[in-house]
Image (cartoon, helix red, strand yellow):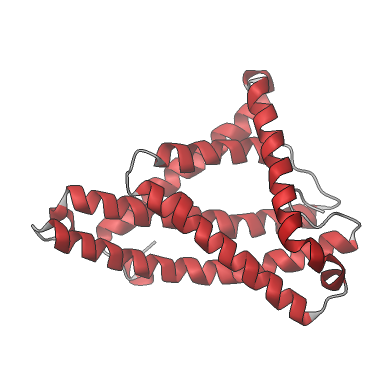
Length: 222
């Protein structure tokens, strides 16, 4: 993306591009492996993914279960509340799981690359009631997944700026650290905008899932 769009230094934009490529490659490799050589995926990994999905469903039910009926009815207050909750959860998740972890740089391999690989495996098995349902599901996912890349870039930029302060055009680590956090603030402005749209999109998608007879947990297209 051009610097004028993100209003961040060129080195941050280059970092975004590198991380985006890493994530796409990880996701694509998981998808391709699951499709072409499924036997190469260890059974323990498949069990891990299944348990992770079950745990995710249980956690979602604890938070959103009480809103199911009113959401199905399309009550605007419920849509607003659920959208706010989704936004808050995703924003906090981005900051903790991707930005804070990535300040140490090394964990990005596990938080983003490994996570992308797991997502690719999951995407290989998606199916829905229609082509439109799948496209909308992927669009909803893309909005959220794109913030993983941006949040990771914010964290790595902070870590690199502390180790290599001249990357920020200064010799002081303190100044470099402060500039990197300022860059991160700009990136989180973009993340917030994306997640605000994504949250409303996801809640409306969940309502469609409910109307189609689903459980309301959008781990698969309706």
